[in-house]
Length: 254
Image 1 (tube, one colour):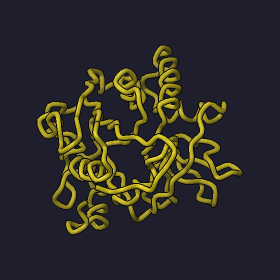
Image 2 (tube, rainbow, N blue to C red):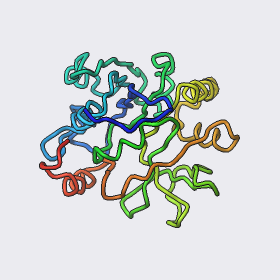
Image 3 (cartoon, helix red, strand yellow):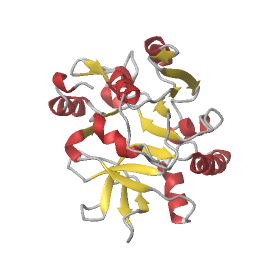
């Protein structure tokens, strides 16, 4: 097990994995299995993540499931090594987005938490700097990357979220990797804001909308952690899978 350098801040030993989505862009591989169970260089995306979490001493994993929920539960069971595993089922995963999955976990977690999406692969050592509260993994932009970016403020903290589209690459804009570390207090504040979105029936939003609003009004502060662009990949399509296998060949398994 890794030994982290001494830190005064609370560090997470609970991870929250959002794995309810259908992964339709990865069809036909996801027609009859969950996206996180797709193999990459001989090991599933989920198994790679479990090994990394185990190496850093995580003791609890909460998984929000929906599409092919049984396949995930059958694969994981209720324990993996020292990691206790529990599940939250989204019955309306076909018509909601990840904001709803995150909201469903609000009552299951009352502690510091590492939030991670289920379609990510990354080098093990990159996670170490995320094990401090209120951090966001970011990356310099490359052509294959899609989606939300963040800009940095004058103190090199996150100044704003740019939702839904890639900004023009420059020295202050970075791609979000979709890994976050939250202190207990921050997680509680996020859950309160999620309640207002769900009450307004904004279940089709992405959770980044909440983070963007909280950054803008000063109720959320996030410190960026740089993930080198050649050390991680987001698997959305068959092309992504092929590209990721070049970066993470079989000998690179954690």
